[in-house]
Every structure is written in C-alpha cells, then in structure tokens.
Length: 471
Image (tube, rainbow, N blue to C red):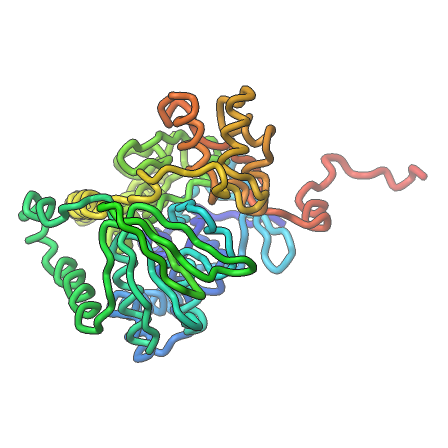
C-alpha cells in the first residue's frame, strides 16, 4: 500500500523540523523521514535521550536543540525514524524501515539532509584511533563516551574549540589542539567584518569564551600547522606535525580527532539529478536553488545545510521560505502575515550569510585546501585506493570521477563516494590542469546505500501479475 501526503521531508534536523511544523500549521499533510532514532539531526543527536540538565553539559546550543527536538516530538507532526530512503521515482519515495520496504507519494519533496564532515586526507588517517571530530561528537552525544588515553584535536573552526571545551567539561583533557588554519592573521579579518560581528555579538562572545576556557585549562593550542602524519602499526601511536615556520614535532597519542569544517550532504540531490555547481571558495559541490530553496528538479526543495553551510541557526529561516512557497504552489491561501514572515526570513538569512562569510574567511582549512597529498596517502578508505593509484588512473586516461571509479574502484565502497568524492575531484583537477567545476563529481545512482537481496526483491516488484495457471 502506498501512502499519499502533500509534502515529504527527508531529515529531522533543525531545517526539517522547522519546515514540517510550518507546513503542518498551514494545513498540509506532511511526513518526515529520518535515519536516526529521533529528531534533532546530527547537531542535536540523541536529543530525546538526555535530561535537560545533562544536555547543558554539552553547551547552551545543544541544550536549546534538545528543547526544540522535544517540542517537535510533542507537536503531532507525523514522523518516522530509523528510515533510509532507497529510491525516489517521480513522486514516489521508497524507504526502508526495520528491514521492510515502504512507499509514499508526495506532491512536493523537501531535502533537509544536512551536512557531512569535510574529508581531510593525510598520511596515516586510515589508522584505527583516528576519526573525525564531528563523528566522535556524535558518539559523545549518544553515549557520553570520551577518549581513552592521550589524544589531540586537529583542525580549524568553531567545532574544534567547542569539542575541546565539551570534553573538558566531561573530565577529559586533550594533550593539545593542533590548529591547521591557513589564515595566518584572523584578527585582521575580524576588523574588516566589524559591523557583522557587532550584529552577532553573542556568537562572537561564545567563540571567545571557548578560547578563554582552553587557555585557563592550560591546553596548548599549536598554531600554523601545515602538515600532519599519523604513525603506528595496528593503531595510531604518534602524530607528527609540521608548522608554517618549518619546525616539526611529534606527540605520542592513542587517538587523533580531526576536523576542518563541513560540506553539504549532496548524495540524494545528485541522485535526483538536481543541478549542482562547484563552489570555488568552499571547494565542494553545492545545489543550485532559487530564492525559496527549489532545485532544478521541479517540486524538490533543498534547505538548511544541505543547500549550503550556514549552520543550525539559519535552518528555520530557509525552511520557512520553502514552506511558504510550497503552500502557495499547493493552493493554500496566504495572508499578509505570511508575506511578512517571508520577508523576515529573507532578512535573517542574509544576516546569517554575512556572518558565515566571516567564519569562512577566518577559518580556512589548511590541510584540505593547501597541504600536498602524497602518493601513499589513502584516498578511498573503503576500497583502499591511494592518491598514487588515482593519479596513475588519470595518466592512463581517466578524466573524471566516473572513469576513475572504473579504473580504481575508488568510490565503490560502502560510503558510495560520500567521503572520497571531494578529494577525487581535487586530485583529478590537479593532475589534469582542469578546473574542479569542469571535473565535476561522481554520478550518484540509487540505491544510495547497500541493500540486502531480500530488500532488493521487495524494492523491485514484478510489473505484471503472474498467471497462476502457468506451471
């Protein structure tokens, strides 16, 4: 049986929750699907599992996210969790829940799939004990697990500082923070953005408080790191770093957490053939959308960080713009108050974009953008493909990610290119001399994630009924 709704929303993070509540308030039939066990997305993961006072240990933003997720859960908006979208064909969305296939049809589709961590390949990053700081933060939110033994945080951006403070609050102390920011003079950037910073004084104060807490705790922040190399046999045992001044040093560690920002999660949009462009500033693919978030695929909207990284605070504003346009398209009568809400959301989004422009300038990834990638560095960890093997494929005639996949199996693993995709585009561009936008990305096809044979059999029913009289 196929259910029918007005709007299907993929993702129950800040953007998806806001869009669903706005659309339901406008009288539309909505259904939210999310892979997690509850609402909140990555940024507010496990929100329903944490008492409010316990959530505050992870910071005020997380505590507020917990409150938002609880409000959404109590709002009566239809939502299903533990769901994985396997295919979208026309207006029909196929999704798996608890191993069984379900189908819904929706007049409009909203992708609120959020962001993924930017891949940061460096020698040894595939060793056990090394993982993205954002990925580890999810474990922290879900189970309060903290690193065992000596560890360091590497990278740049607000999340690195936030996580160091969260770990300190839970009694875990990093050996150091290795700052890979390629911007040598962020203070000068701040001075050039004074009006924007003044309008975002709360966020600025929060960032300054993170740095002050690290300083008071005596955590060394080693700036100007331009290269990393992890060493070990069965697991990471040491991290060697090189600084901008040419000096090098090594720290004995049992864990390395690295992070250089996030990029939009574009897998579903690419599979739907929504147009994407290569953003030269952020060096990643970003979907092309209009002022309301509608993509090149008519009736499909992309909102929140899936449409471009602006953060959780901007998500409700992009959600409102999409919700109002969808409601209008589906024949809802909007009053003057709704028009005012659209203009307010647009102004708020513009403020968020100006502040994001400052953050992007002040925290430039040094490893992902500037550090050379050695031939020995693993690019596709799923299929164990090195940078050297990828470069050889280009020399053998591969001129794009799809051809490189055929030559090397790079991108054919469980993640289906989500992790290696951006790096593959970068390396092919460097090897061929083409611009990354000319190289492009992987051609994503359904199903987005591996499926069992039983699930596939359920996914592909026979087109015609079987004649029972045929032996």
